[in-house]
Length: 110
Length: 112
Image (tube, rainbow over the protein chains, first blue to last red):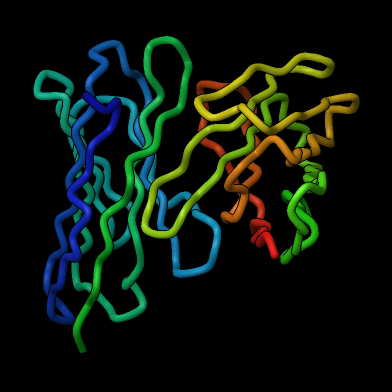
């Protein structure tokens, strides 16, 4: 079982819709959870982090964490074509090792 | 401006050569990392360092070597023992291993 799993997509949503990206992790001791956005040919950039159960909102982005289900998600409201990228989920497990998922490719259709 | 600088952006290597990728940060971060990314794949950890003069192997360390003589610098050498080195190499740093990592712009290595 992989430490962090994501649906590779591609996920296509129309402009203005909500994009929902999901991630599961295997280590129940995991403490920190991160979402990175990576445009083609570029390096990942941090867009959200979450440490506690529940929702965390930042502009059009909402991160959701459910430690009981070992599940973390990212919602993008009012999706824009500029949101088209690969989204990487990263989890810091109980042993302070940071694991990345393989990423979900999102396409926002104008 | 604070940040992480990787150089060069593109690098071509002949088979059998060693090459060194540079990574410098001025964020005063203790932890630094090297990741490899292949097309359509996630990030795989090569090496990481939590403090000067100390580093640990990641998941795919074979064929690579690193040094951490200064807090700001964490160069990666891709040796001739690495059989399939063509990839996108990313350097990152963080305050410590429990906090978010920030990435440099990457080095694209191609074997010719």
